[in-house]
Length: 207
Image 1 (cartoon, rainbow, N blue to C red):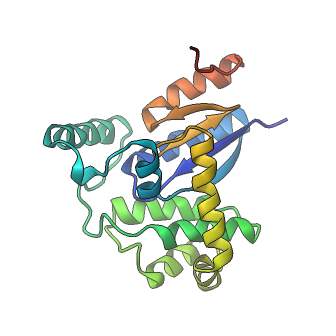
Image 2 (image 1 turned 90 degrees about the horizontal axis):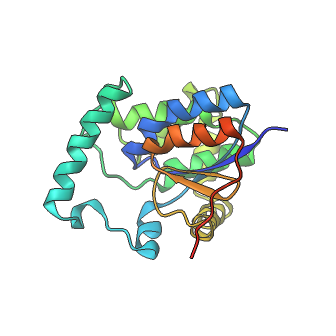
């Protein structure tokens, strides 16, 4: 039976983008089931003690830029550190993922295009027209999904993802949850693979 990973992410997060292909590799090798759970980072940060980038100490902001360059090289990627349309309101782009899932579609082709769209192509992901084009290119009914992404039903599911994240002790993007054990950050992909490979019991916090 396939093992499940709850995949919490935001298109706002460069780290989710950097980790997406390595995660897909694990899905294929270990026959995993991904539960896609896009989540609004601002709400998650405020409830779990995190700070938006602009409010972090300048030393932390500078270090982030160094780390992005390191991991850009490590993962063999080519992306902008400060994309033209970033930061942006990710609600609609995230909502398309939820709408696709609700309609029974595999959202991953859309994810791959959207991550590249913001970090490489510097497109405006707050634009419905851009999202329709990206969804269509992924083989999805773009106009229908973008329209549904703004509905009360999808907003409620988006909020539930946030509540699920908090209940699971998730506080940032990306986070991969395997059997209740949280692996936070794309730089934990290798540790996630170790857990999958060994079949060990999940680690739990201890007093």
